Length: 356
Image 1 (tube, rainbow, N blue to C red):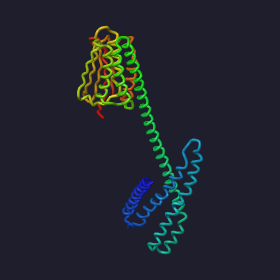
Image 2 (cartoon, rainbow, N blue to C red):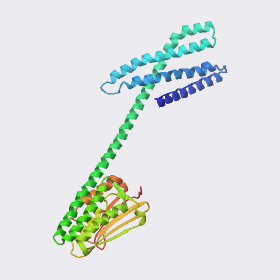
Image 3 (cartoon, one colour):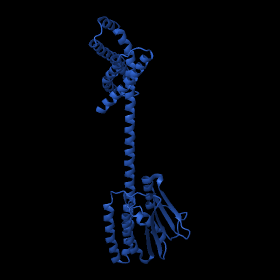
Image 4 (tube, rainbow, N blue to C red):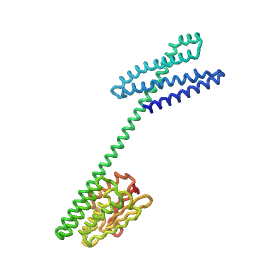
């Protein structure tokens, strides 16, 4: 309310200054003496009376919505109220002016002439006042429309953000059972060969599940945290594959503090093991690299398997990883799968570097 009054008074003062300046320039150009009370004071009085009436006009206009179904009713109500406010403002204005002239000691004859022309002056002023009233009403509806538009825009952005967050959470939560089922399958296979190793894998899996649950509500983690989780997962896989799996991790110190999506590398490593190690009888290599270049964090996972063929289809892990990156970064990311010249698959993720 205080802000509204401040805006109204400021507008009234601005208009009074403009009209006063116009009157003063006209008087000076004609060589006539300046009557500060009538030529300046009365202008301020006129607009300040309108300032006093403006909240009432806004209140009345606010009771009616400009809708297609009721616009005729609204228009009639506004016109009727305007035909009441316009002459009322003129009566108040001329009453104050009449009182001021009395206090200034105007002659009886001058005051009598004022009273004679008063009805005609009020009629003329009413016409002008109705136009000002219409401008105030239009200004109110324009501002009200803009305010509601902005509110809808903000709500739409908030809703879009919540939907995107829900989609990200859904994609991430799909990775948890996917990772869990694959790891349990590995343990099940190992149970046939080495119960002790399978038991160690179960213990390590429980540690990983605890880490996963601790970060269940976090979309973003540091790359160091992501690598700690990844090392635990790789311990399980190396227990399963023994000497058939070699892992090399090359991550620059500058990249460790970078914020990355939670569980962003595990599906890539799982895919490398599945297509680069599982299908072969000999030893295989999985490499994980990360570095910061020109404000971009680049992460790569590669294997020395057969690489992509025409029958290759992205599984849950790669599909969800790509979808999460699109949700989080839009066009500001890169997700690329390509065959290496000497054989094997290289998966590259590039995202803007952010450490907080």
